[in-house]
Image (cartoon, rainbow, N blue to C red; front, side, top):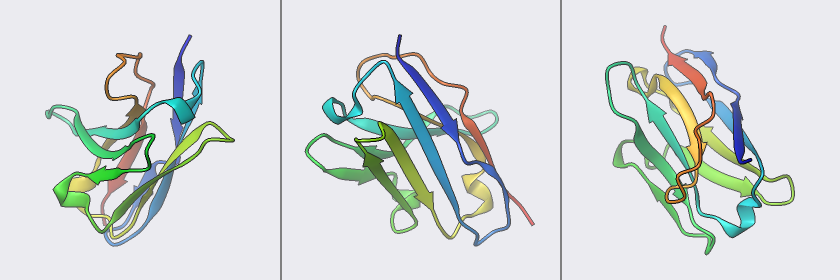
Length: 114
């Protein structure tokens, strides 16, 4: 059974940084594209950052230059480094493969507020 466990969220002031982690089990992430998503209250889930198996990286326009997706295939873990955080980045963050329809994890809450 495929499972994703996200961690690393929290409350941070505007301009601050957080590093999210996503530990995967049941799959070998080295064989899959992986992505981070977020869902803010009352809004649809949106794709924030995408890492392909060919090492291509893509980002939502609003996070370009501030967020960085990376992966450690040996640890079967995906990361999202978030810098210069803004209040509009407040959301629950999830990781998943963009195409396989795996179940979603619980996510990790990121709150950016002074």
